[in-house]
Amino acid sequence: LVPTITFGENELYNTLSNPRGSRLRKVQDFFLSAFTFSLPLFYGSVLALLPKMVPITTVVGSPIQTIRSDSPSPDYIDQLQEQYIEGLHKLTEQHKARLGYENLKLEIVA
Image: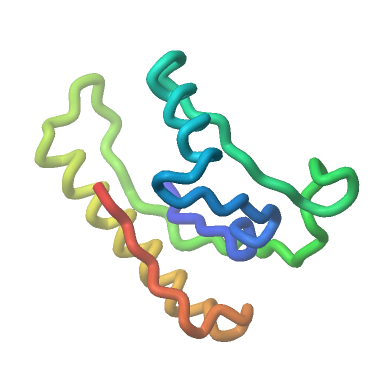
């Protein structure tokens, strides 16, 4: 189990604006109700489908030691998740300024 984070992925594509009440949002809401997923509407660079050419950097943290178990306890899983998230925050703080993301605040919703 190794904390790993990639900087630059969010800049590969732009998304179309679709505020609530817009025609585009109504189409997406229809697809969501009819097919249980929504169409992502995005564009990149060449032919609109290829990603933009932006630097992407992946940083890798220190491995987290685990115990092999066929049925780990929920407490153990929570402990590993906490260590992993802590590792992600540490990597973000350690590398964000050097990579041009000084204002980045990592938010993890569990």
